[in-house]
Image (tube, rainbow, N blue to C red; front, side):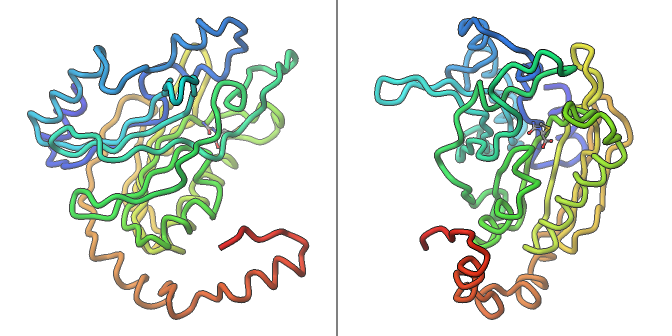
Length: 285
Ligand code: CDT
């Protein structure tokens, strides 16, 4: 809430918080007690603890993206998702995204320095990649590992996205490949964001939950990428840090009307052929 005030004072209309912003990155822990697991999940949004954030957002007239663990009951069954919401400046929740590309594993790896149990604690999101009209923009959401998949950005790009927002928690060490250093992990992170921005002519805002959390280090690298794929703003620390940038949405026009004018240049009729040649089954249109 203090940072929301700071952002408002700095002229921000829309604020992006990280993935699983309300808890520690609990998928790093092997847990067998479902009650313990569920203690990390929100049963309602806003709930008693989060309502003050919504009240403040309404008072300031600032919208936000927030990542959290969602526990929901649908048709009498409990479901758990790694979720983000899009909240308008009047504090209405206007969009929800449930993470689709869940990384990691579902089994216990006792020899690993830490776990990455998103596949155990969450279901794959069931609502696809969507866009919403908000803040005078066409806004799309995804979460962390989704950024590494071109499909994420292209599905949003095909819907005319002008700003993709995402939070991330990326351990600075690859538990499966300790030799992969922080520099390479940062390179892949930026490579994915910059490619997604350029190839879809969209702004990308990516926000880290970084630094040491419960003794585990997560990498920083919060950035704002312009529709040319260039990083125009970047955090400098691993602490709580606010980055304010004026994103000109008209800057998305040039790329969308030239190189990445999908209606003119995209060759969907050939992609099925390529899929047949490679043996990769193309999804039904
Ligand atoms: N939170 C999240 O999705 N993190 C992944 C780490 C993958 S390592 C199993 C990421 O893509 O950054």
